Image 1 (cartoon, helix red, strand yellow):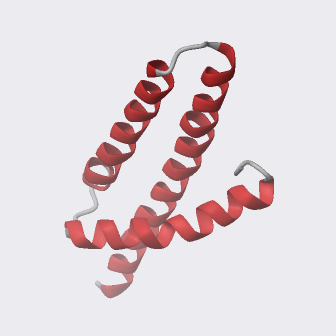
Image 2 (image 1 turned 30 degrees about the vertical axis):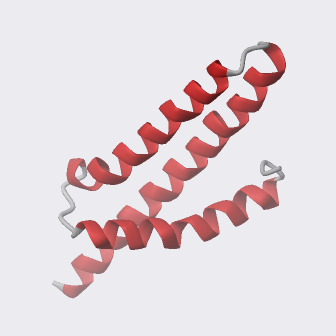
Length: 97
């Protein structure tokens, strides 16, 4: 039982890691691209807001869709712990400014 529970936490960690990488590459970099190509102040902020909504909904619903039942506070803690290696990985690749 305990090994299965740790396996569930690892699955959530990996899925959050992938989500953070996708969010950072698509939405953060995309915002900068939109600011350069389109001279509009509202559109990049709207694009980033859509990305943040996607990020929040994925934190809330993805473990349930994968069939993993964990408490919401555990989801938040795993997400916070996942931020450190995800941003270190992006920094090593040179994708963070």
